[in-house]
Length: 272
Image (cartoon, rainbow, N blue to C red; front, side, top):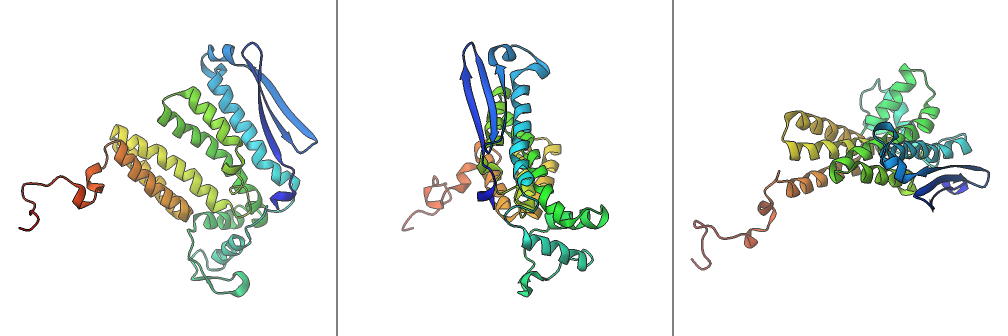
């Protein structure tokens, strides 16, 4: 359970002369940190810039906090038993989608987006990886990929690499952004989250550039979201509607109730 795993803390400390200190503390035994000179780094281009350093720290420390629970235990964290059995059911059905899952012999309908389950089953059968280890390690490793994906979205929306890198660092270390993803049952969640971020990125580019290549990428990532996680599928629909309203892809007045729209010359008048 997560409550039995040493808590990971992230601290940011401002130091004199434009310096800062970023550190991570895992439990009471390990400590990792470093200082950076903000003003000097902001003047340097390329890979020495503050944006690159912040993004590097986001991936590095974000990876540490996501993998730390797995080092503390030798078993998938918290949940995942249902998805484990569902992956085995797919293998037994020769990769034909089963009607029911054999979990607890309860005749539960196999009504769940199956992409993550097919991925786990295929890695187990064709790559020879233990299914238990797949559910233990694959979700946290994939959750690290959500960090650069979040950076892509942030750069596109904010138009500032520095603000995007700073936001990515915060995102990478907020427990709320990875706790559910690194659990044993987090494989569908992390795939849905990763593809949702990519879908947001390509939908934004589609509405702002009107290029067909972004349309194909938006369709592909939206399909992967639907195949991965039901809640993220709803989020994708909401994002498309909001982007359409703000960037002109959808006619905003069409969303108004009919009684709130301006009357047209051909519309009937009350009482006549």
